[in-house]
Length: 97
Image 1: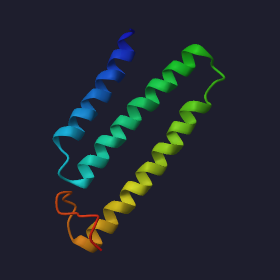
Image 2: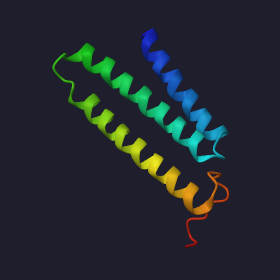
Image 3: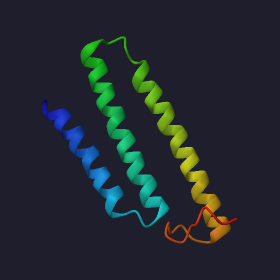
Image 4: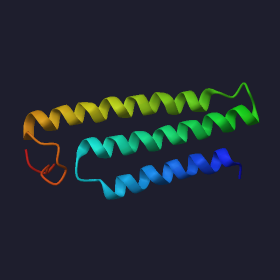
């Protein structure tokens, strides 16, 4: 493995460990998910540039999905703050109206 691939893999593992350890607040969970998506995007971009310079549709698709995920996550953050007055994930119960 190249040093760049190891770096992207370690960044993905760091974000995964952050998601496991800091899963109490919604904002920290969303930031860890964004870090994971960014490391996947960078890995796919580097791999597509090394394989075929014209095959850049997959990183663009991942970038689009990451932007949509960020928008949905921030909308959930605002909605949960307005309705429950907290972003603590342990206090949010999705089964109650």
